[in-house]
Amino acid sequence: MSRLAQTHGLTDIQQEILSTVRDFVDKEIIPVATELEHRDEYPTQIVEGLKELGLFGLMIPEEYGGLGESLLTYALCVEEIARGWMSVSGIINTHFIVAYMIKQHGTQEQREYFLPRMATGEVRGAFSMSEPALGSDVSAISTKGVKVGDEYALTGQKMWLTNGGSSTLVAVLCRTDEGHPEGTAPHKSMTTFLVEKEPGFGEVRPGLTIPGKIEKMGYKGVDTTEMILDGLRIPANRVLGGTTGRGFYQMMDGVEVGRVNVAARGCGVAQRAFELGVSYAQQRHTFGKPIAQHQAIQFKLAEMATKVEAAHAMMVNAARKKDSGERNDLEAGMAKYLASEYCKEVVEDAFRIHGGYGFSKEYEIERLYREAPMLLIGEGTAEIQKMIIGRRLLEEYRFQG
Image (cartoon, rainbow, N blue to C red; front, side, top):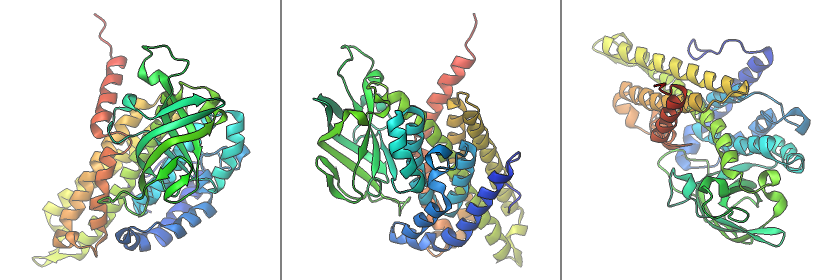
């Protein structure tokens, strides 16, 4: 276990869970990740292993068959998994955001129906806000849910669904205008629908099509898709929480958890990049000595390690704040922003340390170099994080003139 990125004050149970996950990553993920990633192959065996470890139920309460662990435990597990292969952490993240939203905002019937099967990984979650034309402007969504008798008909096009093909439950944000007077703020006329579907591609249920995987430069293995809704009928009891108009708040609460997760992913990828860089620097010789003994490389290693440590500390702080019941949007935004930026920088420095070999697909750093950019845009771009941080700072430090 490395000196860097240690977390103090963990319970024996938390340490045991992390040790188990770290062992699984070292034995079952790292040896196969690069090969699977190059083939863009879904990591079926790894996912089955995560099910056996109970990780799909990590934060689901014990009464619903989960482990009832904290956001901190979850974030530290994600950090370990991303250290092995970032795509695997993405498979878990979207599942957890949906489980968290159902736990926090669902009706009792929704919790009892979905959470026990989500805890075992039998039901696998994805969530969907983004659309082809709107990017970060969630308030501009155009997918509509229209009341038809005791059902809703959903119509529109969604984009960037992680787990879009492999999931069996999608939390979908739609605009529902019924019951909201004209002039209502856009975010107050949005509703989250819990949409069940078959896994796979094509028309997976009447009115619902998952066209296929989006080809990406990195973050491979995990399926990222579009979703087309064409009059998809959903019963009214599948409105999250049973009341329309609450979808925006529900999704933003879930995204706060997701931002801590992205920060944890950045920490994990940066840790792995540092491990690869510091190892290679001691093996590669130039001018009669290992390059690690050249001051230029030592300076890089010092900067990389400091960034790994700082990002980890901010991620842990954001998770602990959410666990304590306090508002954590400022801390989550800061952690996500810093961890993703530092991850990119640490990966690039490790890539530079590898020299020409960093450009070769034989070396793991090549994969990390393509994966790191996703963290700069996932769960809100760096620019969106800075907007959130700036607004919250102005609330906290309002000028009293």
